Length: 314
Image (tube, rainbow, N blue to C red):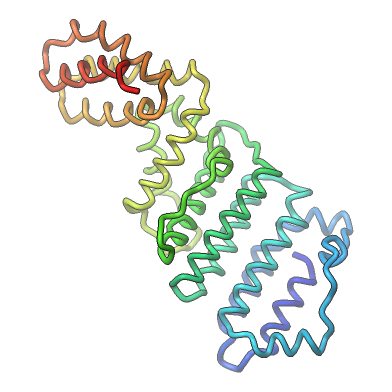
């Protein structure tokens, strides 16, 4: 963490009314304790201050103090968030690009954002954070091993939380950009290779994992957002993997004698073919052959016949 940012936050606190600085102190302690690891590479390389890199003209001392004194506490919290995001993008990402660093960055922003009053401003700045995150991913995409799950799942959880925060006070739900969704392709690939019901497995793992001391319970809103990100990533998977996965699920449905389990497998399969014409055509072809091998359950036979008709659906 650069001393410029710490000094800026300390100034905001010093020039605030007594009794109205608890949230600002929280933000300062959070930056000092959790934010410093993001900037270790910059400190080792002896980089210049943010003003030197960005070309900003420092505000004179008296003028800066006057501006701070008329700012309300909520405005000061927003200023801290804005400066921290600028610092991370300018002073951390150029040196270390990792899922862990992105996770820590989002966690700090989210915790500070939650010191704002619930409403339009909090939602707007949650949306702005996601927009800035997308810009960062465009320039500094993450690269992690396919077997990694802990940090990618944590990052997915935090992105989901910010989407929910953004939607609370805005007129329409926040729509995540494709670039950010794309960062989770390795994670989705891993689950598709290892699990019979990958989306359900991801949601279960996120539900069970520690939530960074955030009071959050995974609900239907989380599940809906995670499903959209998951489905977007499916289209980016290799065709061979998509074919193998959907073929295996269809075989399970064909042989299943329990209606409830057959429906569970069908819902998992549906995620693959809903927006994928290649998989829809593939499923239609093999389902037409499977119809004559499925006579033991009317419910399962109905599913197979529906899948056989998929080739005619645009």
